Image 1 (tube, rainbow, N blue to C red):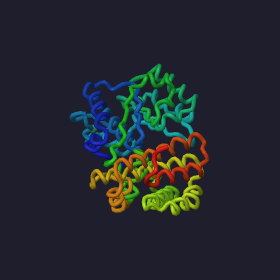
Image 2: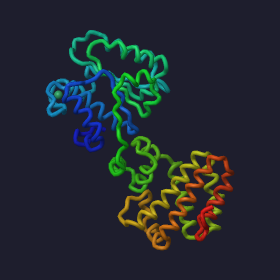
Image 3: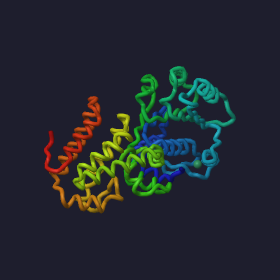
Image 4: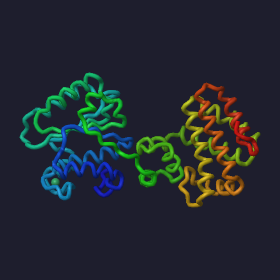
Length: 335
Ligand SMILES: [Zn+2]
């Protein structure tokens, strides 16, 4: 997804300023780590940086989009730009060797050479050591960009040779707009954007049947709880919740989804225009909000948070859910 410079500035204002300052001072370094959870955004910014670094006539730290170099990058065949991707689980040493051969080759093209290592945290030890050696003994005008979602998984000796560029999580309203552009309905987009700020992860979640089922199950339970139907709630817990969320991480996600529902009620009670995780539930949540006090809602939130905590102390999950249902009934206090 190609973005304009204006869109990139809107998405990543701090990073874009940092990079444009580097270009302005003509201090393009030898190695960078670009770290962010939104892979597509990081890749777009990396490509912007490469383009402005190689452009023949940059204007105000922006690529001209007219010169030979800009055109070549746009068409994906600039001889001085190389990409390395993982094959399977790892970035294999053969891929790094091939890359380094290209970097030291005296090409017909003069000027800076740039390589981008995608998912750099997936370099195996051999690959990482090859790169490290290259960073220690640079040849010519070469710039490395290591893209990662977790710089801690990169060798500290590599990290210390790189300038760190930390991407901000994408603001929720922009993620929502992006998700809607891809055709995801607004209710689902709102829910997945509460779970993750990673665009690709959000897409995957919204397309997963399992997630749609989890969302439905949680909302069904929420309706039973808030309609003060304890028997119905317990029935849903036994027949649907427990069989659907057998694993600890599934249960954790489900409790989060439950928490978001209660948070929505607080939000619409305070502001009817609030951004919600479940926009499709707003009419119901609004009527519930009229009935429950903030104190009562806060109490309910605490019960869910407590359940989420004891989930990890290996408490029996059936018991945990039964207790939670009882605790969420009106009038009960936090124990
Ligand atoms: Zn240009």
